[in-house]
Amino acid sequence: MQSTASITGLGTKQGIVGIEALKVYCGLAYIQVGAIFEGRGLDPGRLSNLMMEKRSIGFPFEDPVTNAVNAAKPIIDRLDADELDRIEIVITSSESGVDYSKSITSYVHEYLGLSRNCRLIEVKQACYAATAALQMAAGYVASGISPGCKVLVIATDVSLVNENAGYTEPVMGTGAAAILISDQPRVMAIDFGAFGNYSFETLDSARPSPEFDIADVDRSLFAYLDCLSNSFEEYRSKVNDVDFVETFDYLAMHTPFAGLVKAAHRKMMREFAHASPQQVEQDFTRRVKPSLEYPGIVGNLCSGSVYLGLASIIDRAPYTGACRVGLFSYGSGCSSEFFSGIIDRGSAAVQAHFGIAEHLQSRFELTFDEYTELLEENLRCLRPVDNRDINIEQYGGFLERTTKNAEILVLTGVRNFHRQYKWTRLPCFSQPDKTKDPSRTELDRQAFEKDVNQTVQAGW
Amino acid sequence: MILSSKSAGPAKETVARIVRESISSILPNLSMEAISGDKSLKDHGADSVDRVEIILSIMNRLGIAEPMSNFSNIANIDELVDYLCRAQQA
Image (tube, rainbow over all chains, first blue to last red):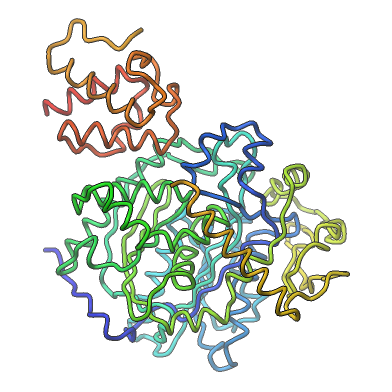
């Protein structure tokens, strides 16, 4: 017999378990989606339905390990020694594994300096895996088996697409999302027990080799849409008094590209609310658009994508009190989940410490020629080799353009299959420190506002 | 081959007309006469979001609710019409 859960009212965010902190790392550089269209000779008429403006681009000194560490480090740095010791499990989710046996987590654990009394694991189920990890972490925390414990979940991936990927190439992102799960859900209290899953075997997209992806676009989009309807239906069957429109103040969905999320929302509004086209548009603007601002300038962050959307809501949505967010996570292959949680202005205050908007704004632009110059080396990121050297100084010309002033972990090479890393303070070279110039900072903020607004309006 | 209803009953003719109208409504630059049964939606210039919208629009007009994944293997518009006729009768 199906169990039935009740989700609480919005009076309190203090549930028993949830997200204590959420941080993303989306690389140092980006390229305009339009530049890839132009460079590859793609049909510009298709740009509007993608609703994407930029995608993050990695460098050859970045990999799934550095992305994960660089996402999680700001969270770790805000914990005191006692809190740090309470991280008892670290889970990375990735479709960009660096070894068939050794986990990404083992490197991440080392470079974050976490306790050795810690459980390490890496999980895989395409872009859904981080949500499976989050739910397993939440279950562990809520079980009471270790009161006060914390679990660090990190979704981390790199892009392996080139011109062979057609219209997927312009929208693939790179980076990681780090999520600290605990009984201090300062960012989002999970509606515990309120979830719906839907999974079945299909080959819609996959990574059969460490050097390329395959995708059947229609099969993947159609599976995504079926999973959304059915996982929500399952959620509704488990939870009392659920209405697709009334129950959730905001929606964050896995975002391969923003245009798919818009189409998916439209389908759900017809199916579960019998809404008119005008109602669909108004609802999209109110409940979905805030989740697309960051994904629209990052690209598909794979299993971190839905959490990038959540971060976007927390930072950018105009809420004043507690609100419920519905989240949909989908991973090819396929598995999916619809679940929910509660955020409030305290969430925004916590997240302000992590400056995700500023991080995205600090990325510098690459031309199409610069992008293709890096591409061949970037596609080698996961190739298993016994020895390899990567000299970050070789990319000094690019790094002169970064406004980011932070220490990041970089990949320096491979020795006997062992990946080598070092901490590097990003050089600002001759550029002025913009953060010390209030007028400059304001100009940058305005430029960023313009960017994100253009992004989400692109397809309308 | 032009999408045709030869050797088909009135039901198939209706489905074929609804398919053509739905495609043309999502792709306004494409006239119904230019829609060819042996070509795919992609061949007619529909991008992935258009393809989703066309299928949903057709199902809405026909009053059927098939899983979207059932449309993954359909190669062209003639096959789409045949599938929809079978779905209607089921």
